[in-house]
Length: 544
Ligand code: F6P
Image 1: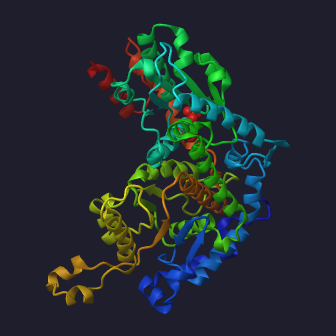
Image 2: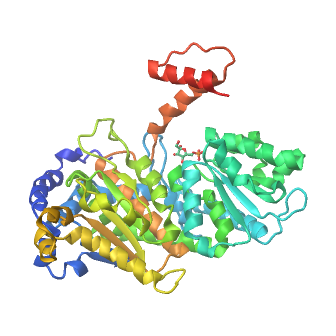
Image 3: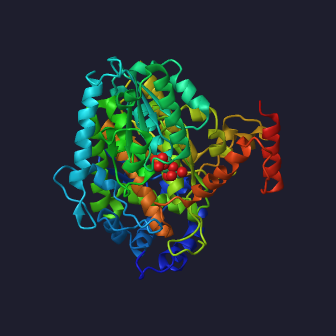
């Protein structure tokens, strides 16, 4: 954070937004639309292949200009340049944040500590492409000479959620002869179920871990090795059935994987920002080189849009600012992400790590406790399923839940009228949320008086709609990059470090203390609180 920037709650634009919010709270989206018949065409951005309709937010032109002023006062422009320029903006880990370099085209330049990182990025990509062609073409044989038919990615957090989400999202482009499984949980059930029907001779494990020390991943990786070797009965089989994706070559060789079979990435790539690094190798194996290149080019297009477009027309900037507006000034605590495409069923789960591990922080970069809300809770399900489950609360509950609707003009599986019905539903939901139904309208339908309050929809519930031509690899790259950068925008304004994750540490440390207490043959001396002590004793005494 540059020294010239005042603390957030002292910035003039922040104070102005607080005042302004009072007048906006008194207004309804019905009024805002009635006053400006062009609002639905005016408050949109149509750029980088994404039509972003933000007109159904509770904002006026004044709100928007105050938000842009806030971005300027927060030196957002300078911080964007600092990120793209390889400065160590992840200050608590003293690291640069250069996931944008992962999708920089060959021949472009991104410098970190005076060194151009783009050649190394493309060296790894080329190695990945060559490997993928051998697997997909059936040239890479297992230890017994069998063709590899199954790929099992073992990883967790950023080393799992991106790969699973992308695999599901791009299934339409995937090679159906290969079976993909993803194992993340330390619960043995995850591994057992993922491998139950697979033949070790035909199975390749991709051990994905930035650090190669994560308990869950290393435990699953050891179990995978034992599962493989129990059938293949030769340590030499590891070379044919295990590859690694990591930043930690020393740990990879210690595990027994030849570093020739390791795909590298770098500490300037955060785990939750790594799906387009070598961590995406399962995605590449599924969709092939050309589609993977298209995915990267989609990411890059959004990067360039974010880096160069004036804030008023900048999709991630506006998305970030609107989320901040809803969170800090309209008291929303969560955001529902509602993709109207079944292929995006894991997208909300992916966004949960991206958004909440990034912006779930309560101290500023200078270590002060914030005096405003930071990262909202992200959640969601694909439409229309969510409509028959939790939308009730979004429409008529007491909480304000801003929604991000994601919809596509073309279906990848056009069956009869399905797609028109799906699309009609997404448009209907945002319309109902914004405009609702008044008591007069309910009465005019002949509803008996006592039932009227139950059937009223207050409306005035904000939403964004992203309408995109079709779900292609390039579009997926754009969508992910859009949210990555929106998270960045919020983090800069909130003055937090969006790229560390200290909040996951304590539980990890405590579990290391508890593991021997669960396993020791002698009764351990327990020094936890009385609840934890009792739980440990009960588990020990009842476990079979
Ligand atoms: O525990 C959180 C975390 O560090 C995430 O940030 C990360 O994505 C995940 O664990 C997995 O880490 P790794 O890739 O090093 O195994």
